[in-house]
Length: 217
Ligand SMILES: [Zn+2]
Image 1: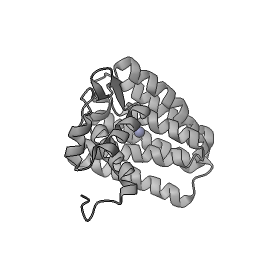
Image 2: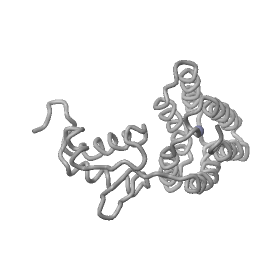
Image 3: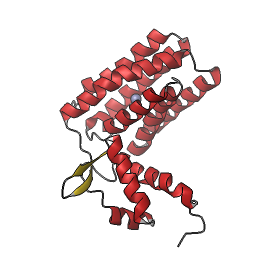
């Protein structure tokens, strides 16, 4: 039976997918944990079919893996895999920033500046890792969506989500989060300058910074 305020059936698929993806990206469903379709369906109060589709989509995105005879699990990236993902992301993020540099309007640059300010506010208060992740993803999504290249945006979305599966000091230490924020400000300034090569360099250097910070306490 459908709840009165549940989304219409046609929208249930993307809605459930968004919820399951959020459980994975927030770390509530940790790397390596099973993605049980019946358990998730019960938890979310929906039928199994949209959950099954959501899990398939996560496998396609590289956020989950199918383990023979054991079912789907949240993907776990080791140090070598995260380095591979970030190396590709550095190049593609640079490309996206270079493209976006000549396309962003003043209003969009203001919006991007607001995102950076929100991240700064969040880091000033008590540590809210989920919010920081959300703002980081929003910052990078905003730039790649203005690069005006669907293939690039889709590929970056996959790589970035995969990178966030890596659990470690990379995302969670206070020092690393402040460093990432400084790098975001640097990217913003380069985009404001409108110079594609400065924007490319700033975006690449942010991801290279992430690689350098891997495993560092
Ligand atoms: Zn970032």
